[in-house]
Length: 389
Image (cartoon, rainbow, N blue to C red; front, side):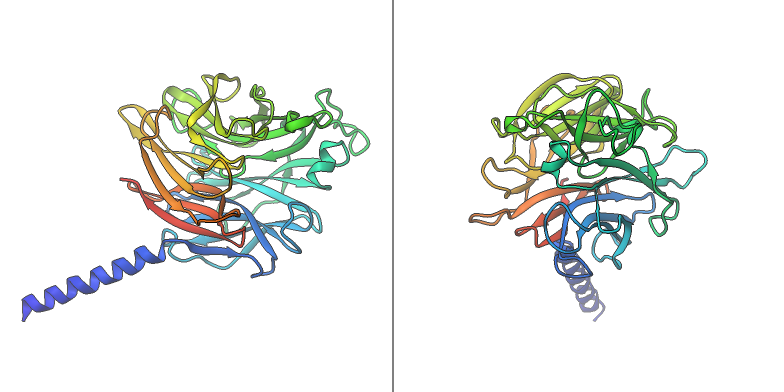
């Protein structure tokens, strides 16, 4: 009788565990047409020291287009992504655009020993194409939270420190000779150095266009900005060499170095572009296309998830296809991104269309990463757990 009871208990526990595993695959977090927004785009996700997950997105009120009445929205999970709380609007720029959320947790500020969340974002007053022509302005802001994302500070405009627009008619201070026009963070999470000479530095990958539009989007360049004093001041990096360098992500690799992983907006090479830095993301060296990371001209996500024999273990996710936004894949590298020997297909749907587009990766625990990604024609943003070891 006892043995039978134990067997039944094991079966029941196995069944419950299987249910949880299934429930953590493609869990809808933001669904277009629900909760006050016609569309949700541009996922970003982070984990907190207590294990909670914070998922951000652009909530597009009236339509699916990039420009218009766009809010930044948030949901929180306190059970590793199985379930998600109520939607919360954290940035509302009236009827204009607030987007490109880039969250990160500052874990090194002695004034906030429990950590303080930074959310960097952009605002805009015209369509991207018009801003590229000089007919509009993109700005850079941040807000912070000290209670796990429940409440947020007043916004701080950091445009003067992180952008170089030539817009004296809008603001006489915006009169830089570089004439940057379009501007966007990441998309996805920002990062903080956890070790080495630059420990504590918060780094936000970004991109901009400069001067009049050029064919094949050659007016775009990738760059980054950073703070070493917990958000009091910010500094700009040099530009990455690639003409058409666009949406990108940053990750710390061994010996205090930084890796950028870029989208090539020109599209003439359907691979991710890599730039490395030995000085904390201020200048760039060893810039090259990575033939092992195919890309259809879309966003990708890069995250440091541990170390192996002193080298960074990286997770990378993107639509690993050279034709369409599909075949979402997570890759693992144990040698600072030199090779990607572990590959996990997250989502693939046969046929034409954008079935898996933008994504962001978050560490769940030592064996799993979470993938927060756009699915099936941008109709929803879902969360999936991937056991990589």
